[in-house]
Length: 289
Image (cartoon, rainbow, N blue to C red; front, side, top):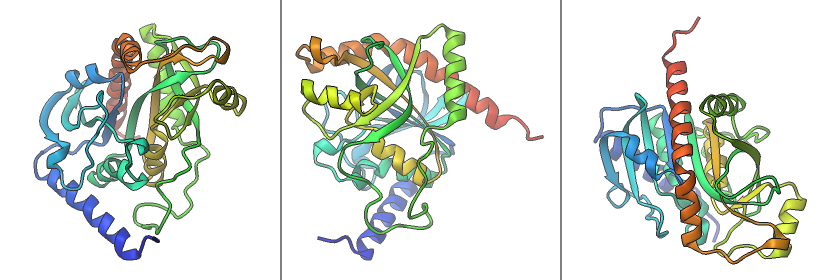
């Protein structure tokens, strides 16, 4: 069934109702949003929360069905900087539509953020990567077969054909490199490929994904980045490499092993993200010349 103009206006109204609900429950007006994917649970504990809202209380918000994803929005300060933090995200493999998966990004942009930080768990295919590494995403490949911008466009949100030549902000990437170096944190860089999931890849698929230029593979992030760029948000994203996806040495993987690798990397990712958040806050507070 084709999506009608009425349907897209209903979607817009739902986004605005969710934003209004959140706005009424906090005095803070953050300009920075964070999607706390796998590996950033510790960062949530670092936030001085002013308001915490369960997803099931926010109008029209989806609910995460993934065991490792808590469903709540934290509004507070991180390193003295006001932030919205989404603790738990949504995936296409859960059965959600692209519009549902990206609904929280639309809401945060409507609330006034101009910058979005994202974390995720990914399988490393670059032979130089190791389990527990952090990878700053420099670019991505969308192999999910879906796009959240399909259907009628809302011009107030963004252009019909948004440019994606630099989806990950170069200045934020330079800042992350600088802070990682100062903190002594090893920071890999590479291309992230998003697949639908939920199954992991075959040996042949890993070979194919590496052949087309991907360094890491996951099942999230790209829809959120597309919508963020559509709404003119600056984006930075970091993957936690939770397993080594080398076809000739491939071993079975469990969710427990993924979570263990994410927990191992969590302190480093938390320190790095806090440093970048603090620097972005200082830049925003600096008087223009």
